Length: 301
Image (cartoon, rainbow, N blue to C red; front, side, top):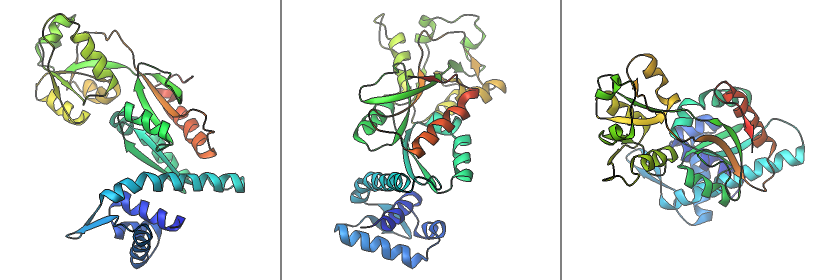
């Protein structure tokens, strides 16, 4: 296998289209197909399943993808170290979460897309515990965390700031008109929550389930957007990062309940401790801090 084959494989795996991959790489589609076939032959496995005009990664392809990303990242790092100059290039694999990807990252992604087109940012949806594991294993170059803790074994982090949280509901919810809401009132509500493993969900759950009665049941949703639809339908209340519901609050579509979370979570950008940050990593860190300075007061850890 060679770097060209790995680049082509990664592009096809990301787009799940030979045609689109060929267009972006400026190759003939036959060249893309030939490179993938050659890579599959050298590995002795099929990397893609071709079904009814669509493709998807095989299990072998899914297992191979993170290794391809690591090799491409290392190749970019080596190229930068050897040449000492030139355009930032290569691939950075970044573990992130829905709220950061949707509400904080667009300006950063736009900047890199236009300013450094040779540097490819690959965003991998990941819960914080999974991100920490992947950073320690070297599967991710960097990762975003939203945790109460700011120090993590084997990981170095840059704290971007305290992430504001609010409990919200439909304006028609009975608690929306209350001047003060307590835990006993919240325990009587249906709570809509993201999947287990989310730090602010676990902290909220601990507050509600403090041993004073039956555990409060959570109605678990797969993502924040589905939680927001549930809130709009009057299904219950939810604790969410303020950034994810700011527009709905301003438009009067959601009401902020009068309960102040007695805990804090901090959004952080992290990488493996002991790893020397490449030029590309440092560029991403600096730009992320600069871009998010409007929302956060950056603090080094």
